[in-house]
Amino acid sequence: MNFLKLIRYQNLLLLAFMQLLFRYGFLNLQNIPLALNDWQYVLLILSTVLIAAAGYVINNILDQETDQINKPKDCIVGKSISEVAAYNIYIVLNSIGVAIGFYLANIIGKPNFASLFIVIAATLYMYATTLKKMAIIGNLIVALLLSISVLIIGIFNLYPAITNNNQAVMGSLFSVLMDYAFYAFMINFLRELVKDMEDINGDYNQGMNTLPIILGIKRSKNIVLGLSFIPIILITIYINTYLLPFRLYIAMAYSIVLILAPLLLFSAKLATATTQKEFYSLSILLKWILLFGIFSILVLNLNIKYNA
Image (cartoon, rainbow, N blue to C red):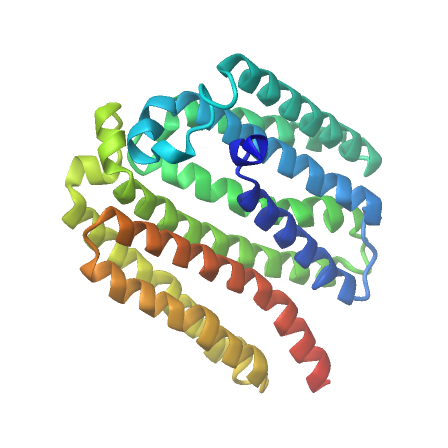
């Protein structure tokens, strides 16, 4: 159980679920060829999950002092698992994840794509050691890496299977993945900023330069509040442009009730939040909003199929 806590298994399960959903709730429902078969796609998921797990491990190793203040009950490294053992786990997870990436890149005939896995692993290390201490930059990196985990589905499944005959179809499907990648980026960016407000005490004692430390909770909260209206506006435009005109009422109702309304609730609660507990609750709310947003790809596809 301590190992599962070390790698933050809940987040990894969410990542795996998201990638499974895009394959079997979206791509497999289209009449297109895919570069990876089922078991190869499982390997792609395993690779991204292992590299992400390694990122969590190195983050826990280097955050021991901060976690003692922010989350003393959740500290694993130095208590249940020694620092040396944690470093060994980090090396093993990264090595297997990158090795699988090399294998898959060669399977699809694009060996250069293997560098993507190396870049992701290196970026996670740089984040844990340096980038997370920089205001906004660290938040952007984490949000960007989650969006890449969506785009990598298209990079390994669609791009190698493009031909002159299906180029337009593949392009439109990749565009859908890009929309969801941007959604994941926006929601996770907001969540990272909220988590910084939640963890301000421990971060301050460690000399980190997060946005709340530089500007204070009140100003940071106002910035996040302003940013929260960006996905609200974009989702509203998306509903009016792509769902309402085509009478996709099920997908529209789903988006309003489980994505748009919770985002409005988030903004309302953020305006009055002041305590660590309240910011934690807002972080959890954003995680649910992210999950419901990703799940909408299946709802949308089933709604299109039902209408047809």
